[in-house]
Amino acid sequence: MKILVVNAGSSSLKYQLIDMDGEKELAKGLVERIGIEGSRLKHSAGEKKTEIEQEIPDHEAAAQLMLKILQDPEYGVIKSTDEIGAVGHRVLHGGSAFTASVIVNDAAKQAIRDCFPLGPLHNPANLMGIEACEKVMKGTPQVAVFDTAFHQTMPPKAYMYGVPKMYEEKLHVRRYGFHGTSHRFVSRRVCEFLGVSPEGKRIIICHLGNGSSLSAVKDGKCQDTSMGLTPLEGLLMGTRCGSCDPAVVQFIANNPLKEDGTPLGHPVSVDDVLTMMNKKSGLLGISGKSSDCRDIDSLADAGDPDATLAREMLIYGIKKYIGSYAAAMGGVDIIVFTAGIGENNAYLRERVIDGLEFMGAKIDPEKNKTRKEAVISACDSKVTVCVIPTNEEIMIARDTLDLVTTGKVRDN
Ligand code: AMP
Image (cartoon, rainbow, N blue to C red; front, side):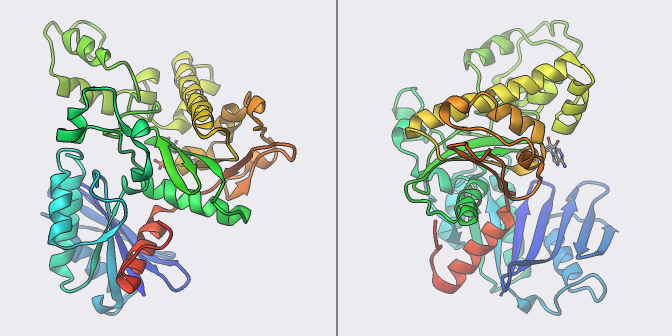
């Protein structure tokens, strides 16, 4: 069966068509600037690549264009949309309602709508993507795969915040965690790769990309994760500040600065401060130059003190999470690095593991040069350290296939 994986943003729609017979990617693409001047589609099928610039007023038009190019005589890979067995959608927030992926029906759509306040930027866009595909592919099953679902096994002691309990009971204020599809894929794949069972294994997954999160996975189930009610909590990220004293929000709201560092002269709203914490902080905010770890590396290697500080803060933060998750699980058997930084940045991996010999983790600098699936720990390391490239699309496609063929997700 061929499965179409869709990730809809507020002005974008990313897609990938996967032949589940061999889990082979047939084509992928991105529709950008939906509803904005300069909208375009970028599409590739193997070596063949094309770009189309045209007016794309809404998500339905984007979905139509996606189907058109997938059936194009030159760049397409299917003759008819009937060949698409089902569509799997990435949905950011499933709240506490979803512990696994689901076939989309009216109740599921309502539950996604109910999570709009928890994922105000993503969930409405994700639902727009679902509804657009429903319209242009009538009768094709649609599946929703939630970024939060894998973390729903966290116990209350890990997911509760220390604010009055009624905020969780009435308003669902709690830690949810994100990147769940990646954490789930990687936690399964690393066990397959090492030929071990997830049962009895204590795994720490470091998903380090533009957005970063760690998870503690015991017996294949998530015990804890670093992101919270929103993806702002946890590690220092590309443009997000990560965890900080909540009183910082109030202090900055009352004493905001202009871009040039001079006082703005009047208070700003909490929303304004959170926008700054989400979009202008992290590696970008500390370095003052870039949110991209490659740039931070080049700058730091050339002696830039702010980029060096940003990099040191990131490394220190990851180390602290690894230490705390090892303590929370009573030890650690496997540490995995994944996503853009985790898969590619050997320096950062080495620095993170450096000094963790006390808990049995030791890196092999030669093995660590890899950018592929590999064990990178030394032969005498008690903890197995691995690089496992993530593949959220395959996980979404697998869940979609399972739900439409057997009615349930295997290995949730
Ligand atoms: P992601 O959000 O997973 O796409 O990851 C983005 C981050 O990964 C950025 O900070 C990039 O600097 C980093 N990254 C992506 N590719 C590479 C690469 N080939 N080498 C080093 N860093 C990379």
